Image 1 (tube, rainbow, N blue to C red):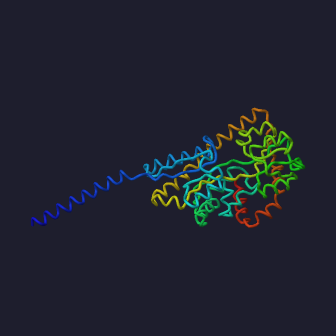
Image 2: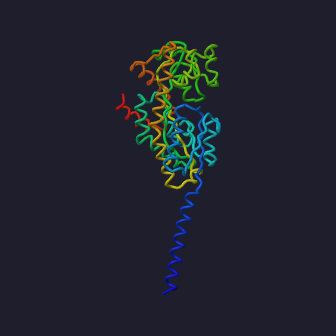
Image 3: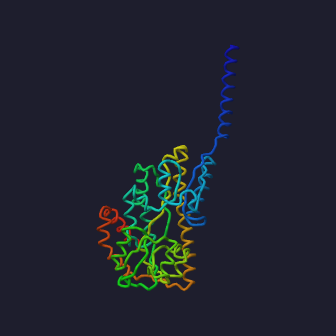
Amino acid sequence: MKKLIVLMLILVSAASLSVFAQGATDAEIKPVILKLSEVHAEGYPTSLADHEFARLVNERTNGRVQIEVYTGGTLYNQETGAIEALQVGDLAFARVSASPVASYVPALNAIQMPYLYNNSTHMWAVLNGEVGQKMLADIEKSGSGLIGLCYYDAGSRSFYLTKAVYKVADMAGLKIRLQNNKMMVRMAELLGATGVTGIGPNDVYSAITQGVVDGAENNWPTYQNMGDYEAAKFYILDQHTRVPEILLGSVEALKKVSPADLEIIKQTAKDTQEFEIEAWAKKEAESEKIVRAAGTTVIELTPEAYAEFQSKMAPLYDEFGKDYMTIINQIREIGKNYR
């Protein structure tokens, strides 16, 4: 009997020590430190969202996962470099444009077609609906080593020029600086203009003032931040493209966190989308206010003129969108509810 009592006491003591040891272990567990790369500067809408994402992940995992945000391209000054780092696990997160991600999920090319969306509400209905969410899920299924976490807003791109444009005929003969993108060059050509590539973003202002080009195209914040509104006084609000940003994760790097914390990370990313959209809208409004106050002429196309710009893209859709017409038609169908 005494032996039995002694044995029971030993077992109870061992269990108590185990619980104590487990508690001590939990308290001493080091947090998982993950890095996020952002090419935009501090204060930019996506940078603000990156920091909010990091804050919420830290809060929701009780400090088990901590994210260090590196803005201004301090880790990787090119989004393609950040994507490569994600693939091998040298980086955990990166905010990038949807454009380079289309290399792994070609269907993403469909959402970048010119004059596809009626407005921003139409675009978000697509991205947050079945079409956009499938593309986001397909990033992880692609075998690229990437995880599509959420979309962020990057606004719309419009032409800014040294002359007024109210209809397609007014585009004839204009030389317009474009990104090095075959589809965008073709877009300009179909509108009667000439796309000029090879001019860096920091050189657009001088290219316009020196007469090398008659203008360029970009969103409100870039038009204002780069000072291009002082050289090209007409902003043509044609909103020809809306290419969203994507917050990506690394399959390899995120193996460091538990499955439960990975789900927290994924949900938290989605929860920051609205935060970024609001930050973008605020920045866009601020830039527009500055531009208008400087005497810039902002031209809003009539529905008839916009339809004319759209109709000129038919050959482009045949060339660049033929493999994605099912998706494009889905997007157009959704747009009937957002005119």
